[in-house]
Length: 262
Image 1 (cartoon, rainbow, N blue to C red):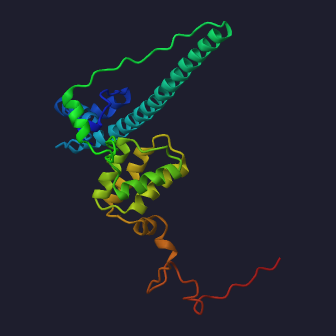
Image 2: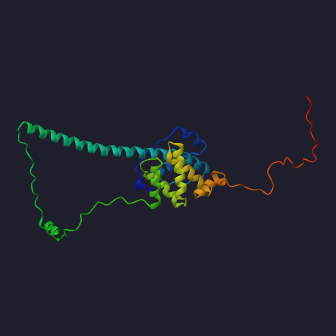
């Protein structure tokens, strides 16, 4: 992820990481720690010469992604609560002003009304206003750039599956990387559906585990995934020779067995 999109600057360390790190040299442990800090700050996956260090980082990355996703959710809730609190303060101020004016009217007291003081406009500003066409609409604030069509469709599926009201920057960056790697939109939606049906707590790590496994197996479409995980879509496999033992192959040569008399 781009550094400007990474707003979380803290890392939680867990004691259960110590066991997989004990088998590594201290030099690799130091590189792994720097990789954890770099991944949290930039989202770039570090590369290690030691394959054991790479496996340890993949184990740690699941916990890092889960913490980042939880932090994004908390931040979004705080932002919504702050906006709601601002509206409530405005409503309280309006109610207080109304009550004050009502009390003044009941007591037949004059309520002072503030009179706006005209502000002198410079001559240069008047000339600029005079040159402006009355039909020219006022400039509107720049809207947020729209999401790419594929990512916009994935966010719609994210909401419909009940995974959240919106995808955070971390989720958007992860799914954008899978799209760039050639994974089909329908395959990514299927990974979302699997996470929703299993009601997992760490949604993004679960989706990543499915899509990373697809990339490792060379699976890029939903049809290929269903063929690999659901027995080839129910197609029958005919073999030139029957599997197992043929019970009737030696029926003529076998001696007849008689039922023993009681």
